Image (cartoon, rainbow, N blue to C red; front, side, top):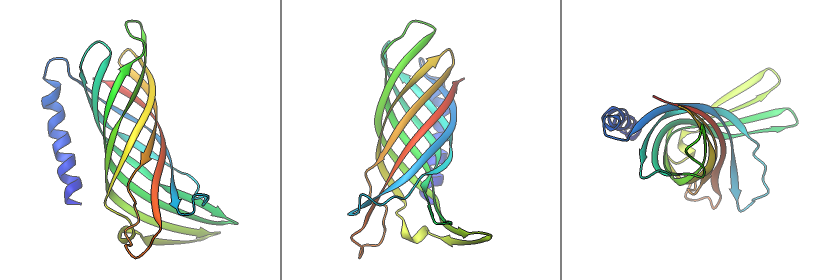
Length: 201
């Protein structure tokens, strides 16, 4: 949890300073994430999707007319949700996610710019919680001990800039095994699709 606070503080302090440099812009974005988990060795296991919130800020550093480096800091609600004959189980994995994206403008110079992007991502776990509900009965469980605190992944996607506004869609492919139980051979990795709307200030 201390690492999360340090990363948040660094990001908040860095954004105003970075925005003062020539060519740098910053902004905010928010949207929804549809997240699930992949199970190894049973790749066919169906965890279902959890729909959550994604929101945060970004700094954009132009490297030319088409290329931009864009670090982001996002609160992202991941996990999974499954419904087995009325028994609904939800795993809530909430993260501070820090992707560092390389953004390339496929078209530019007009009112709209189509872009693609990709890059690495590191996510710091803020909360992990599991709930199981059947009818009117709900059981809450603290799942913190079962999942790793840090997740590494890669992000790829594309979108459209129009004026100071933007819309993008991205896929986050988790590389880390989230299962903290070293005696267990099961590997659990996250997958997420996120749609975000953003604005530059």
